[in-house]
Amino acid sequence: MATKRKLAAMAPTEEEPVDPADELTFLALGGGNEVGRSCHIVQYKGKTVMLDAGMHPAYDGIAALPFYDEFDLSTVDILLITHFHMDHAASLPYVLAKTNFHGRIFMTHPTKAIYKWLISDSVRVQNTYSSSDQRTSLFTEAEHLETFTQIEAIDYHTTHTISSIRITPYPAGHVLGAAMYLIEIAGLNILFTGDYSREEDRHLIPAEVPKGVKIDVLITESTFGIAQHIPRLERETALMKSITSVLNRGGRALLPVFALGRAQELLLILDEYWSKHPEYQKIPIYYASNLARKCMVVYQTYISAMNDNIKRIFRERMAQAESA
Image (cartoon, one colour):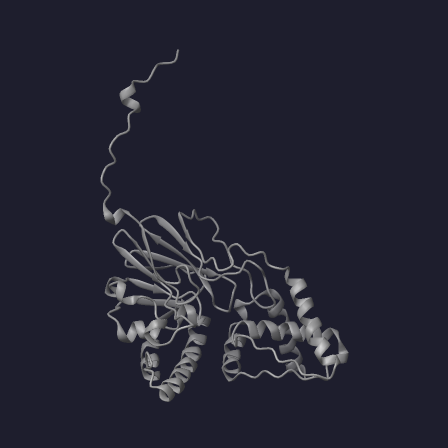
């Protein structure tokens, strides 16, 4: 026989006050409702994690930085860099040399290696412009190299505990060394994706979803969150049609792309097409980027971080070189 509940039991009760330390707070110092200068702050249970330290490509000087003066960086326990692109990592030397940040910094081994060359190239460009129009550089080459030694490189799937914060990097696709971070604070699992790709390309594995872990909070990039992408095969076919159309007329195809990530992927697309079409094999492909050429050594070093196709090609070419 059903019993009738008392009305008092159904009446709303006053909410108990919540300890601020029990609330998870998220603050976008940059990269919120914009593309560029990514930098986010996550706080929970008295712990503070900073995610990325980028610069905005459309601005110069201080205006390009995240709003660092809006937060006390001395309270940050750890800073996690997801990948080497400028909008995610370029203001790191400024943070380490010019602010009161005292935490520890982590990124993957490939990211650290490429970051070093990329920031050095950025300083050179800054100095070129600052000397011509009196703009002040945000940091010097010496400051970059000095702060570089503070960066700790870690491997995918390895868990590290810092001040009771557990972090584990996972492959994110996107570019070599890019990482998603699983962050555990007092039993709460937070996954920060950074820029990621779930589509396997010519040289990278797709982003890996952590297995056997309940994600309580997902913080994800959303640059193309509502975009419908044209299938990859269609895009590649259209690209090669445009290139070969120029070549067939006796012309030269100039392809301006990002020096790191896009350039390597494009070279692999061209290499595959050339290998299947002997009529183009006498046409040389020029790789006009000193920065990309330097960083190619890093790509060769971290073949293990690439997909099975690249590993197979690398083994075959190494075997051919040894037998030659």
